[in-house]
Image 1 (cartoon, rainbow, N blue to C red):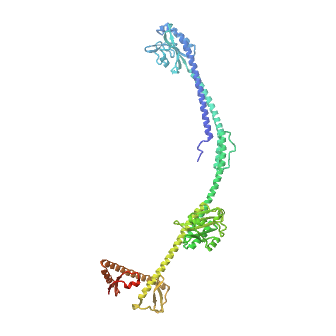
Image 2: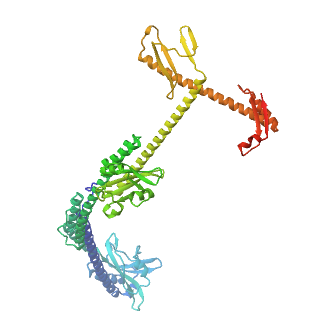
Image 3: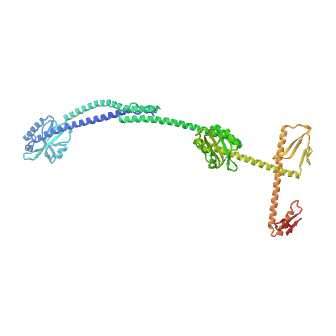
Length: 620
């Protein structure tokens, strides 16, 4: 995965620190600026409040009530007084008195001269009075100020109002004082500019400090990253030697070193286990290949004795066992006899007729009875089960039953001169091999039985064929001879000197001869002899087919006659009629001269047969 597109930790930390410091600095500057501005405005409001209060106290309410026009003496008197008030403070811009009628607020005396900028003549309506003035004009008892600055074409001002009372204590009007805020605004702007300059200078320092701090904070983490990178590249011996000064990072570095150690040990263990597993797999693969090779070799062998010898030899050679034997159960099923062995000791056991009873104490007897494989890892621990002087080198043994269709044929007995020589995988392969061997043994047995049955059947068929043709030849000898004059029947075969003779055989029995002679003593070729031999074989088969057809026809006629007689017998209702019908029908058979049918009493003593009463019917 490409990581160059992501920002580094140092850069991110620097950015975060710079932003936090900048925000903090900006926040502090803003708070300072707002406090400074509020103090300036509070100071201005306090000054205006004092000026307005004093101005209200200096007003002559009685004279204000007498002002009727801009030129009367009361107007001039009040204006001169207010001009003095305006002149007492250079920031005061307007000082004016107001009254209210049904139409609204209007100006009475404005402390200014006619034609002066912002001057309001007597009776001029106050078009846009401040909200505090409108709200409190009728109920004003003390000095009030507008809450905010207002700005018009004459500048930015802050207004204050105070009630004017007559000598009798009656409120007769309101005096308004406008103080300019330009100075304050200018001071605010100056102060703000100064803070901005300070902030920018501090920001530069913050950036430098941010990168320095980020480098300081990221350095131990970068060290951990470099260590992890080396480990990812396969260097599992690498460890962090310089522990960071921060507790959490120090704990992380220590844990990282411990993890590296554990990981190295785990990988070494995994490599060892993989190597062992690979060796086991290779060993099992070799065993499976050996089992497949043995199966292929035995599949081509049909003789049982040769099959057993090949199996024990190949098992010992392919798997490296020093002795392999095959026990087969006898026909009686009560004992297993050693039939084949690969070791010299096993051959001596075969010569001595070594056998083991089914179910007897020991490895083979118990396996034959239970039909389950058994393994003995160390014969020394089970010496009472194995005591054989012909196999003294045995240290471990595996006995695998040979089972086909849940029938035990025998066992495959394997011995090794090493303890712990058989594992679960070995037994699995050997059991598979034993199943294949059992099938091969069963097939060989079935083949032997089939061949024996075929031989018996062929012998029986040959005997019956010989007997049938002996009777057939006794009935009549048939000889036919072909000459240029035509075909003639002879009583006996002629023998010529220049003739080729061949026998007509059927299933190994001679039933006739063929004799062929040529003119002028011409020689016979091998092809002619083979042709005559093939013709003789075909003649034998054809003659036998005709004989079989005649026999079948004769049996069919006999069965037809028996059926017809049974039908006739079934139509008779008494014994005499039945006997007469039987005698008559039997007398009509071919070559029958006389037929007699009789019944007699059942006697137990043959000597009393002459005294029995007979019922006899004779047909001639």
